[in-house]
Length: 120
Image (tube, rainbow, N blue to C red; front, side, top):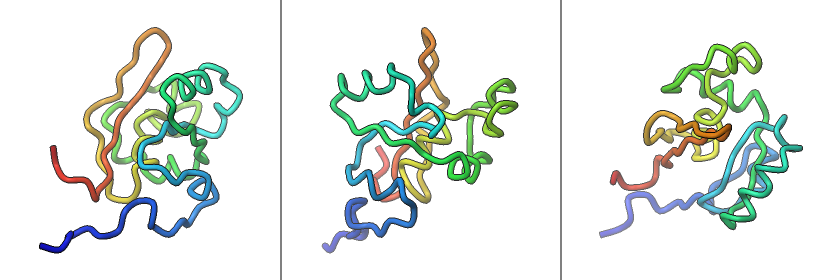
């Protein structure tokens, strides 16, 4: 039958400046204030993925959906988990986290699934 979700992410209309930079379906997303962190640029290069910097207000808009809450990070940014919020924003409206963020050796990451993707 017909695809119930005919609109791909690439075809979606972009309502924010950062969305115009990112046309792919898989990317690394983080907060704008981390633009100078070399490790993020290195990771994006090694993984061959785009690196997209998001404004804090976009992350704040998804803060009630987070699975993890760091009091230190929340005090600094207003968001309990930058990684989780960035993953949700990057994956688009209606997206969901696969699970809580993972943190190891000073690196934190979270993975979110777009609302258009089929459940695993």
